Length: 324
Image (cartoon, rainbow, N blue to C red; front, side, top):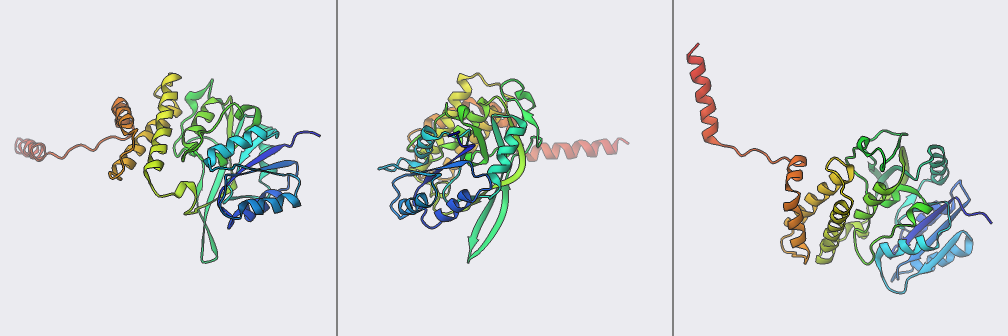
């Protein structure tokens, strides 16, 4: 039997309310030659029961269960270990995908012949049984339908509004299986996705909303800021800094710029929650001092107002007018 064209990897945790919609969007794809790998991360609700019911209905669904909660990174790593598809797509269990997505993405990645295909995602929110869509997540600063080469021609790549969520990418399995997510942590994709994009030979962006991202207050991206959450976020920044340093990434590289932007964001996130004091805060402060020059370039500080200087300018102007 030939390998499936796409392996959809779904980490599952405590999503009994949304899981059926996610699975339905996967099993009803117009491209049928796919496998759907579901990894339950010791969910305390009925998620594993729902997975079992769907597995009985569709042989393409493969269910694995982790006996202890190891968070999303570990679930994704398990999926990577067992996946056999030509391409990998991560889908979160409280989201859903367009029913034509697999076919459109597969055709596009074949047409452009790239390691990694980037596409858009639409956010949505359910309020009083009404679904509202807004704020599409997409790449900005790069051309659509153009092949980029991060290793050999990185100077033409200039990102802003970098999308770090891994469901926004379709990747060759033989490329992504060399990588692993950090396990047992929040924000496991904050460093994973930029490093992956830096490491592939080629990628392309198409302006297609394949993915629908639920604004879920219970998801890992919306959890309250606790000591653990903040430490995991800072740890991702530190990991990025080590990668930048070890690979001698130049200042005008897109990954370098992305790292510096995340560094500043993490510092102010800590400062705005001064009641939290993570163990790695000294490392964060040290990094900020190290990259202060680059931070000033990207986030220029406003000039301090000087009354003396202002009066001097006015006086100089008045004197000039009197000399006319």
